[in-house]
Each structure stands twice: as structure tokens, then as C-alpha cells.
Image (tube, rainbow, N blue to C red; front, side, top):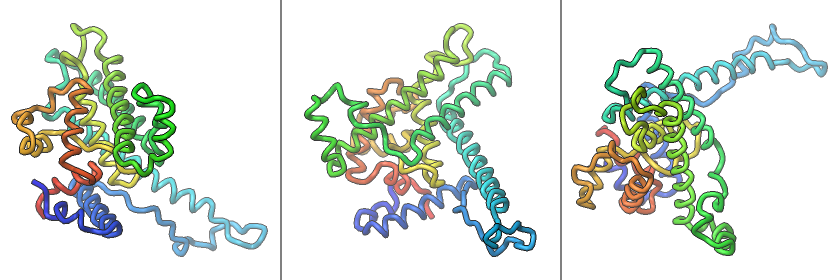
Length: 285
């Protein structure tokens, strides 16, 4: 059930909200022994006697700075590596994907490594940039004049902005599903995947969990959606009976996924979904 911090969240000002969200991110990472400190290059700890001297007489600390950057990037890579593994495990823990036939360790490794590669690739699409232009995703539903009018007022129109982000997110879910099936589900008889192959449920869970991790690590802006699982659906069932005994693992069309998101948005109301989920389902402190 939603925590007290989530219930009080709406009454806070923006600065207080930012602090609450940051603290929730840190608690989330701590639960998984995962964390990425801010890059801090302390020039006072450099042995200047070993540094080269520039022509203007200043110390050349290029090498020392480069070593510090390299160490930080290695730490970041390790955090991403852990996040990828946790995301895949979350997607298949209650949603089996492998065929009942004997699968070699090599086949399993190839499958998981390709999955990780695609998740990381998609994650990079969310780094420090807005989703693709509005017209590139939902132009079929609007005239050119409508698009121009909407784009001019996009920052003021929360519902349209949310739709833009959701469409972008849906495209990534579909892309992941198609890429996995294209590579591993050609021949059902000999596939390492059970029928019907890599599903929407596998795609959304692994992607949403991965994005949640790297968002909390501070590597990407806030994702537009949150992981959909039995906990989310059990809370939705109190608002809509159709979610009683509804299994997220059976979802295999973007239409089904979209309907869940639309119903969940009603529950979140004006709060960003990712922040709402982060606060609402924290373990009791």
C-alpha cells in the first residue's frame, strides 16, 4: 500500500519534493547494494611534485584527471552491469521464457547478453534528451495544423506531453520485443524460447526496471512509466475489478499494456508515474 511519504507528497513544494525523491532513490539503490557517487576530483590530493609544468608555469594535471575519470567510468559500468542483470531476472522470475528443451549454458549466455545489449542501447536513447519530436510518433491521429498548435503549447499541456512520452516508451517496448524474437524465435520447434516467444510482458518489465535503476543512479532523466507487476495490479484492482487476479505475465499486446498504463495514470493523477511508484511501494522504514 502507498506509504505515508507518498500520501503527503502532493502538499510539498518543488524543492521539498526533489529532496524526498532523491532520498527515495538512495534508499532504493541501497536495498540492492548499488550506488554511484557524484564525480568529485579533489585537486588537493594530487602530488604536484610529480606533475609536469605547463609553459605558463601552471601544473599539468591532465593525466591525474584522466585516471580519475577512468575510475569513475569503471564504477559506472559496473553499476549498469548489475542493473542489467537485475532487470532481466525481474522479467523472468515470474514469467518463464526458456523452452522446456535442454538449453546449453552457451545458448543461455548468448541470449542474455543480447538482451542486455538491447536494454543498454535503449537506455542510451533516454540519456539527457527529450523523446523524438511529437509528430514522429502520433502524426496519424492529427492534422498538420493540429500538430503545429500542439507543439507550440506542448510545455503547458501536461496530458499531451504525457502522451508523447508514453508513445516513445511504447515504441521502445515493441522494438525490444521484435529484436529478441527476430534473433531467437525464427523456428518454434528449435527455439530456445517457449511459445509465443519474447512477450510484451518480458519487454516492459526488463526495460522499466532497468530504466528505474539508471534513473535512480542519475544517469537518465525520469522515465515516463514504471514497472508493471503483480503489486501494481493488486493496487489497481481496488479501483477496477477487472484487475482481480489479472496477471501481468500474460500481457502480449501493446494495447493491453497501454490500457494498464492509462488506468494507472488515473491512480497517479497529476504525479509523474515513476516518482509515484518509487514512493508508493517503498518497504516500511
